[in-house]
Each structure stands twice: as structure tokens, then as C-alpha cells.
Length: 288
Image (cartoon, rainbow, N blue to C red; front, side, top):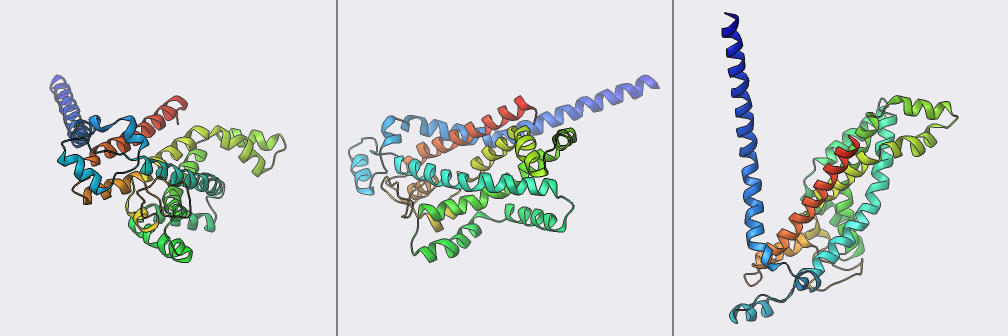
């Protein structure tokens, strides 16, 4: 009887393992299919000119297609715009998110902190198109024009809750002995937080920042309402500017430029993949 029960448990264990492995493989199929399609169609478009030249006009693209030549130009304007808006968003979101997350971790029981935590979760679940519309009303209308500033504000709003939550959760799992040791040495709460707890939680916070960047870098809807797009390489932050996701949308809507979708998509996928792998490496190395 005992052997029968043991065999039954072992059979159930193997069946469960095989089921989990099959479901895990099934979830990987769409991802591998997407990566394979984009890689197959876009790898031959990646070149020095693709990264250093701005988007061609529809007329130039049409002439190249009629002559049987590769479409000239690239996505330099989108790369520059993405870097500018992302850089400004990170500069705003990182200090604000870290300080807010530290406050929530230290005052988890206060009613104000609980309200802020609830609003953070609500903001994290807000659709990006709504954030784009709100940013349009708050920034674009008063400034009387689309700009990189408005685009960076939209990305900042989207990044903020992710950085707040990662900072809060990382600080909560730190050993309480760190804080107690700092206070025992005569430091006040603010000094202990800045000099002891935040440096100890650096890897977890940095991982959260990378994941927040990878979350917003592919957003198109908020940038359509704020940055609008531009066919030129532009460094001005108070004028319309392009971004790689905006270029992909523009390529899709222009039959003469649709072939460039694959190269731009591959660049964006590789960038996001690099950020995610970096975040996982840091988390694994520091056991966060």
C-alpha cells in the first residue's frame, strides 16, 4: 500500500513538472516568434548610415524603391530625440522617486504615506494615452507648442511610480540592524537614510530605474500628444522632436517607408533587451 502511494506521488510530481515545463515553453513561443520575425527582417537594415542619418522623405524613399535601391536615411533623429527626452525624464524621476520611496518605507503606517502609496499604484495603472492627454493639457497648451520638454514630462510621470515602488520595497527588505547601527552612532533619521540605507539598497534601486526606463522607452501614445515628431535631427528642447517609437508609427503610415519599420523595431528591441539583462545581472549579483 505504501509503495502504491509513493508511486502515485512520484507520477503526480512528474506530471506536474512536465505540465509546468510545457506551459513555460508555450509562453515563450510568442516572444521567440516576435524576436525572430524582427531579427530576420531588420538585421540587414542596421548600418552606420541607419544610425547617423535622419529619416528620408517619402519622395526620396519612393525614388529609391523605383530604382531598386535600399531606402536612404535612417533613424538618427529618433535616437537623438529619445536620448534627450529619456535623459530629462530620468533626471527628474530618479531623485523624486527615490526620495518618495524612502519616505513611504520610513512612514508606512502614517495616513499620508498610505494615501501616497495608493495614488502611486493608481498612477502606475493609468493608461499611457491618458497620461499623454493630461500632459498635453498641462504642458503643451500653456507652452503653445509641442516640445521635448512636454515629452519628457510624460515619460517622467510614467517612470515615477515604478521607481517609487522599487525603492520602497528594496528599503523594506534591508536588515533593521543597519538603521539601528546608524542611529546608535548618533546619526539622525535623514542622515542614516542618505548615508547608510540608500547606499545599501543601491543595486535594487538601480535595477528599478533600469526597468522603468525599459518600460517607457517604447511608448508612442504619450509622445504623439507631447513631442509630436520631427524629420530633422534636433537638439532644442522647446520644439517638436522625434523618438524611435514615433518613427515606427510614422513608417507604418507611409507605404514608402514601411520597410524601415523592421530596423527601427530591432534597434528598440535590442535596447530594451540590453536594459532588462543588465537589470537581471545586477539583481543576481547583489541578491536583490
